[in-house]
Image (cartoon, rainbow, N blue to C red; front, side, top):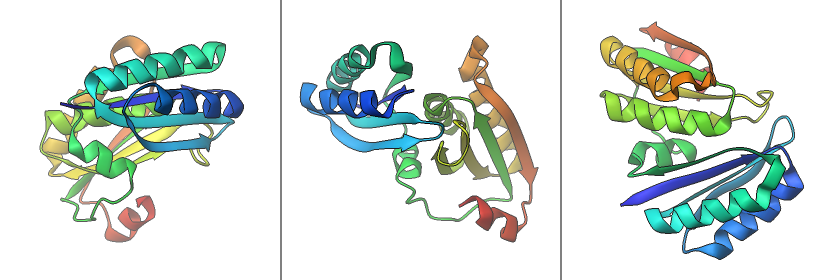
Amino acid sequence: MEALGMIELVSIAKGIEAGDAIVKTAEVKLISAMASCPGKYVVLVRGRVAAVRSAIEVGAKTAGKTLVNHIIIPNVHDQVFTALSQTTEVEPGDSVGVIETYSLATSVLVADAAVKAASVEILEIRLGRGLGGKAFVVLSGDVSSVRAAVDAAVNANGEEGMIAHTAVIPRINKDMLRTLL
């Protein structure tokens, strides 16, 4: 079973240090390590659940007080990896859902919940570059599936309050869709 692990920090220097500790701790594959707005740093890895759990725990400990959030998603949906690497093919359905979050880690978590809940495609998970620390997820499919996926994402967030806004847009204009990808 493959898992995804992620840490989000408010320090670029500590983020680089934590990322190094993560990849040295266990047999995990680095998906991404990058600075994002406003001065955050995020590290994403994938691998076996136990290895990811161990690596992220070490990363969180290394991050100390600079840690914003960390997640481990066992049995993560394959579309999450594709959307994070920005290699999704654009073949949208007739509607689009957008889930805007205050936390980069929350965007990955709710994207996984959304794609597991309904027959949708994740077009992109945009992690905080030029977004003032926010992130967003773009989904496509038929209107009812997109609504169900967005609802599942909101429910997966629970009481944490990390979802800023959502939108379900029936029959999005193709020119507008191109601006999202």
